[in-house]
Length: 318
Image (cartoon, rainbow, N blue to C red; front, side, top):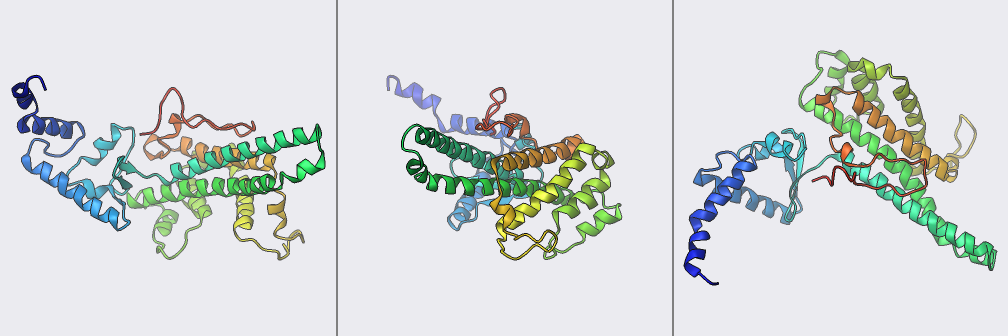
């Protein structure tokens, strides 16, 4: 160090304290220039570290309200956070807003991309086999084809899970804020106990369609909804595997899970994502929850190609 005295002045405790306080102000901490604020912040994160050691990393945003202006703090990051939303505490990344529908959406894209990788490998091996040893080489693709079958089913499951996570999160959001309680159907839905499982179709019919008439009469959304019901039945068949007979068509209930083709997967993923995107677009701005959507490329499942996550013009979700 060339000039220790100057360095001491530059990095004095008072200077560092001012820099910390300035950063608190920029991050919307309450009372950033009070000495007690630093102590409160240290105490808060010390408690969260202890909780993390016990496996608890998630907490409500309202728990931050004593030290941070919660909404402005996350709004400057592009996240419309509310007090009843959950945060995940990560030792390296800090406080991460958790949005279930975003987590399940990434599951769709990741599973689809794995499916494309697997299909490409199989296609390459088939091309080799047709030019060399024929069926002997095709036999070696059994493991790959088995994995592809699993990925096709996982894609179907991921799509419905994404739709459900959006619907249940929207319901949670509205219920926490007690919105639209003057509507008898909505009030009845809110009145159900946690132990009473609320169906996804109840949220669509008794909440979304009930209080947003433009969404209810949208022909495209209604078409998607009908397809969603069918695809949900297929998803249920995958999760609850059964060899019993379907009384309606006399086929084995296992049949739909055997017949899952890549075109069916493409149709399912496209229909379900467009169904949810269309509902969210039909909402008033203050009720939309897919705030992250424009940061990603719109998925096109009609092409058997990998989906690029990040919209190059927007950058990654922080």
